[in-house]
Image 1 (cartoon, one colour):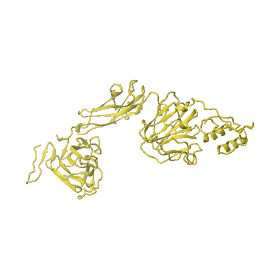
Image 2 (cartoon, rainbow, N blue to C red; image 1 turned 180 degrees about the vertical axis):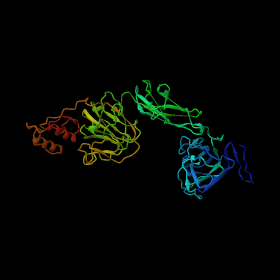
Image 3 (spheres, rainbow, N blue to C red; image 1 turned 45 degrees about the vertical axis):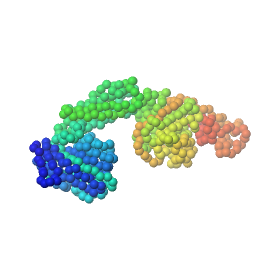
Image 4 (cartoon, helix red, strand yellow; image 1 turned 30 degrees about the horizontal axis):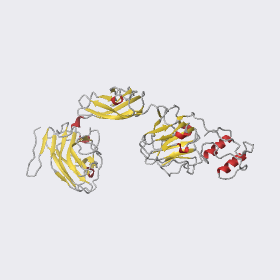
Length: 536
């Protein structure tokens, strides 16, 4: 197109049109607080818009103070290009706003020299002196099919005191035209990836999926996708959108494929890079992370077969020896996972979520019938949790549970088994429901939740370790057993009173766990008295 110059009188800024790119360079001051506008008149532009992008070059002391709106010819509607973009100070360096960009301009570090999606939606200029038009748009695509010719206005509202800026230039790109000063990512294909499961181990199969957003003008064809798990020592993997490659439905632009984690893959988090291309020479690349756990990890979903329950009857038994980690996931803030384990050497037992889990955890230890033993919320300078051998002295089976902070165990009367106090210490049950078994969970709910890791030290499979032997059931040593006087004397001594056959009564540590007096002594005593086993 032949350039069109508008230079009517002194002081007017030159506007030019070339190859359907229209540019204006006003060097306009953006004052502190009031709204300013600048208008670019398009003449001899396309009669029908099939695609339009906007590029901006401006600087400001704080981009988060600015709401930037585009008002197309007619003045009855507006599009929010960006609002409250966090960057102090901030510079938009020929920043392109394009519906086909891969993300919006929300956070980051200036200068911004890339393509972003317009924010769209409603904006209410807080200190605006010029109100926006009555109608708002969600995207630049709303302008497709309209005439490009006329007055286009850029409205910039500084909605916070402090700081000024300058609008150096802005341009409109119509129908696939490119401002040569704009960013080179115009031809980028947008794609997002995922890997399932996100935590795996050697010899296990994992699936990579990549969702591609085809470009228009011209429409993407012949899309190919490759994943490169070379950081794991695996070969390049071609992904397919055929409905047969764990990719969803055929033709939905989701590409999938699977590979086996090599035995030599490094432990920890590694990136899997993926590359997408179309026949129009557009491409995109990004990466997704996979966490390779030790072979000694127990997986809630893979080894346990699904979601671990939250109470002893539905707890997931850990059945394999030599496990050093529990790997699972809290799907919601009210999700609780409980595992059935054995502890054979209590003096060297330890479990912890410190250093390995990102959200605020609580971990609990119960007897198999649900009576509380010990819990920990925050392990000193950490939001994660640790339980040691401090209050665990008896070998045998236990229930290990994990929950999000402040989602706590309660008894059947809705009383908390542990008080909400002493967050940084290991606590024995001290709430109103302490004598009773866990019957449910209740409390405040917080986000985020997600994958967790519990490191295990000296934890064995359920049923491995024999429980300690209990004292004789003839507590008062009167030669009559079982009789109710044994119960009476046991409860009397437990409460600090006397025994009818003093000093010949048994000691109050009936289950010989080294903890006395504790509710497990009473619980096990009554269980043995009724003909049950000497076990929790």
